[in-house]
Length: 427
Ligand SMILES: *Cc1c(COP(=O)(O)O)cnc(C)c1O
Image 1: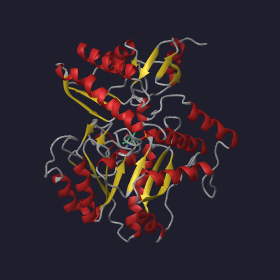
Image 2: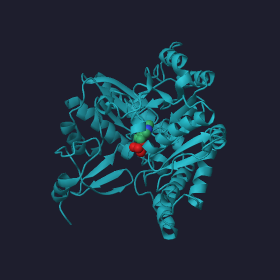
Image 3: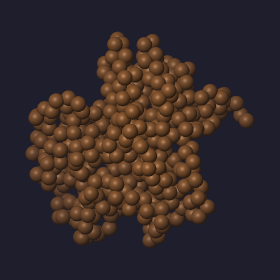
Image 4: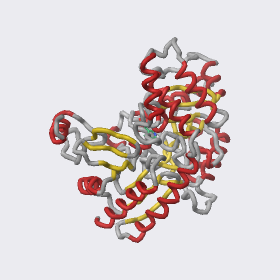
């Protein structure tokens, strides 16, 4: 068995990590195994996972039901192309997604990652208006503080500052940005909250295909939770102006905010919805874009009639089987009570952070706990400090946050909260 130092030294010679310098000496930890809520490092240390590996591993790691689903499918067929062919795992998954998402969504495009699902959503919206003879409607309205992925189309609707749009000038589509949605989830409603959105729609609806945003919780763009009334009024505004509504549920989907889909806090259904991250319970990469019958019919009804997208690994049977198993597991569990219990415990246990000098705000929604600092964290110091305390968290910028697997036991969640309070007391 190569030692941990060997592995990290080998990594440093050729591997590029996400949002990291391509040649880097940033702290790096080698994982040997992952089971339940625990990551075991190659040096034998165990870390309690507070991230669900970026929202995905909602049932924890190596869940026997997910492992069995993937290995059963592996014995039959690991992959076939999806052009002209179909198979049970993909059909059953699409039927399930149509059944559990808001009613008007009837058609599913399976994509290989969240960013691709966002590209597909944007393309559906553009093709909808092309098919209607309104090809000039090809811009999007997004909101500040949003995050939609790293491919160019998705980046172009991500917050322009966080997404460093200035670096890619000329290569990115120029879209329109309204103020970040508000007020906060539990703040009193403010009737002028949609002022800048309404003004943009008023002025630009003739050239806008869709509004795209994350429902209720803005995630990687700032971990902010906004008022459900915002979505209700936005839905009405989109309808009034003949603009589609795309909701990106990739981070919020499958119960994370306390509802199965975050848009259900508002009772709002989009024209197009993106799913991802927790879709396979963290087992494999898979995402989806769903649309209404109206969008599908319109695109199918006029030239070129086809939808212009088709990834090589579309509808991968292993990923579809994992997703089906994950959704069955979730819906068969008491996820709502678990998420509510995590919310109550995080509210209680992160509250002491409010008294710390370094802390600007503490907020919790569903199984998401966020401590916002006044200054960006020093990752080179903070990341190893969390590992020392036996937890895995991945802060960014001014945000230290946790979105643990739903199966986490209260004692393990307390270890995460204590580590956050402890480490932030020292910075
Ligand atoms: C993570 C994320 C994406 C991008 O998904 P990838 O699988 O990383 O491409 C898009 N939208 C939201 C809201 C996300 O959180």
